[in-house]
Length: 144
Image (cartoon, rainbow, N blue to C red; front, side):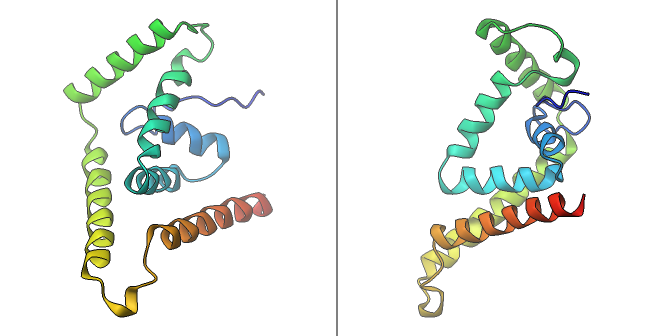
């Protein structure tokens, strides 16, 4: 069976990008969500990459259809977004809340400028996130 990257319909909060990436990589989609949250908070790249994947990666129920035109994909994004705004996923508020708490805590600790937290910066946080994420991927690969 061919292993393709698709946007998940079942494991979806907004567009199914993180659910599809989690399936494709064989890891928990919540780890992918945490990665995108941190990437968005610290550089804004998470949001850009998410929207690019939303446009470029087909949805699970349309994976076999050659809807390669950019116009078709943009119409699908619009339809997905309208569906999300009319029928929001309850988990979305949880993830937005997690992102806000994480960003607020980090920014507050940096703004306090406490001497014993001088090492706390985005470089340290990114290094820790990459080590954790890479360790999880290695663990999953070795586990089977």
